[in-house]
Length: 360
Image (cartoon, rainbow, N blue to C red; front, side, top):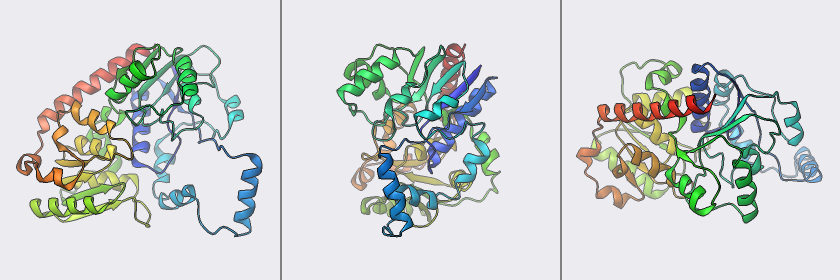
């Protein structure tokens, strides 16, 4: 089939790059012709407002850089991954007119990551294929709301609920997403839970990108989205208990982020991982590393719970340094690789069965 994949707009985020790559790779391996619908986040600012902003920048009246400009500068080493691994893709769609140049697809897939997070995507209805007006198979794969509570307005609930009725199949990434759809939004569909697409590939698939290990370990790898005093205390405690030197990648820092390949290497070579990132948890599991996850409530904790529950590892989730003090660190320092192999294998089979069944 000729498939159009719609994901969260391009950004300088390791998880987004790798989940998009993984889903494309899996669909291609099934014999499909897959193209990324390269949709940018549409600006809510008026044309006059955008013109004024450009003029201000040109006149250097506003020396403060926008969030997007800062992310682009810090993520410069990530850019090559999107260019080299996520293809083919359409032209960049920056407004509604951009959809008119899209080719027709046999099927369209929306997923994964937080594609249904109201605060992150724009326009929201487009992630329910509002722009498709011809017959095609529509499905969601592991789409995430990012949170376990209702963010949608009454109007958005009604609009998106009507659009989702056109879907042949609906799958979400978290169990909380099923509850939102059925109990809160009360949409007319039957959602199922599917694993994040990164889990459909093995560590060996990612080692083809990161390069084979030299056999040298790098101690305690800490991948932190939002550094706090409490997380620093956790790092100190793990470092002391496990006698490991920490290597920290914090997105709060001013320096440029490492490349996607370097990020993967950090998981591959670590002896232990501490992270407040959902995909940090995922890649700890993929590379079979003992880890502790710090629940990131601001960014949405439901996805941590759903992921760790699927592997029977909820005890590795903490929300404060005091939670860690209650843990059995002897047990936490070990990881049952055979158990992880079995669970990941089951999740992959479940996902492949779903995709094979619905994409026909």
